[in-house]
Image (cartoon, rainbow, N blue to C red; front, side, top):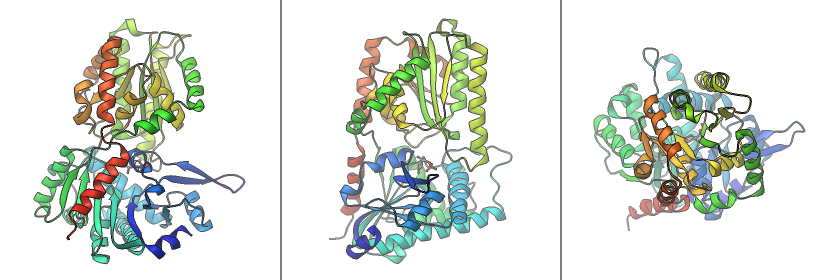
Length: 470
Ligand code: G6P
């Protein structure tokens, strides 16, 4: 198998993440169906691929994945860890997505959250087991002196654990999320705070998407771990993959979806406001819909003349709070359509079934892109839309997205909590003249592609090796 082959020669470069490049489902006839994973991490890392000779260690996330491991089915250069389903559920849903994600995105709602109780401690024990499984697999697979790049908040303890098992390795960790400010990180129990920080500081080098998140980490380390010690901290602002996107966005399946989408939009000269997200609390989809409703309220002239194309793909549906949020998105979209819709005009076209080709179709057609997260490590959608836009697209962008620091000058910047401001920005964006829009889109696309995924990855590898003695 791939695993034995890699172990025999030992991999020189290893990547570790919870979600890997593919996920499997078992079809009714018992065969396995492979799908590309979603989210910024996979979009970024997929560009590296097995061609680069890297071994990607990831987790079996579903029954289909565990079945694939059992059958020895897999992709070249990928090793899936069949962590027991209950351990994974605790570590992924319980700790990573309910605690760490909420801490870094400032998502807790007082007075009920957070509660660190016995249940939390039980889940934390799973998080440790989960991290240990990665550290052991990496220790087993890595050639002497190899470089290991650990990804994200699911695996904060891996660098420290791996350092103990294999002091010879060069270890990096990269965060695809924001990092919490000191006062918010302080909500975590003190021993957990320290364990997380010490785990990450086991790395030679830590990477973040913007200076803002890197500084927040450094401040937390200073406050709770006596500083960053010998660990270096760097910034790598992952960009969009222009070559891949432009080629992919002109394939026949995308053209087909453009035709279908045009029909749903109706009317020949209607403008579109496009958003594409995982249905994710931090993406702020509900306030986006509220802002759109406000726009229709304040500016009757846009009724019948604009359609909000909102793709909100299912995410983390094991968590009740995500299911409730999904229901609220649907409810509000329906309500807006009932209130304002006419026989020939559906104000909100909402799709919840994940379809990458249709996302690209919407990217190409967008007159306005709405990217209004409460907080976001980077937000690749804001970078991808200007790259494939057919006729230029005005970007309404939250100042709390990492992308703001790279794209802010040519976007219409909003406070994501301010629905009225967002509505005004949508109005302004819809009214932007074609020349200005095209000019801005060109500059946005240039900024968005400054650091393509392959370069982003190689820069980190180089920086990791630079610190190498000798
Ligand atoms: C964010 C995280 C990634 C994660 C992605 C999708 O981008 O930083 O680590 O893979 O969301 O979320 P999921 O829980 O489906 O992997």
